Image (cartoon, rainbow, N blue to C red; front, side, top):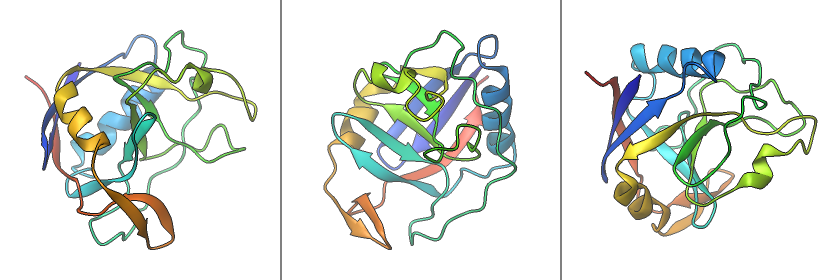
Length: 163
């Protein structure tokens, strides 16, 4: 299953791994199918690490996620460059809901349990790494109590299942 994420910097095509990460994939697709990611931003951008999105609007108003899901971090997928994983709260392994991140570097340390679990990868970018690289290089600032927020919002205009 593939989805196309249309951003203000270009399109990203992501292949989801339903076999190895069925819970995370179903969760992500529920937000996609409901249009919940449309109009959100990449609110946390750290070059050399990852870009995170899925919950904040350009004015930093946070959209509420649905019930958290079970963490599938032991699925054999690794946090390598170009993979997408569920974001979660520290010290709360089963707290992922609508936020996700795309690794812009090999972050295999996220595969190791630091607070009882690692971070669950559920897919990988198959087209648009140039867009990911453009996003990771934007200038960031502190805004609304958050750090590493792009100066100019990088908007996720839509996420749709690819044909």
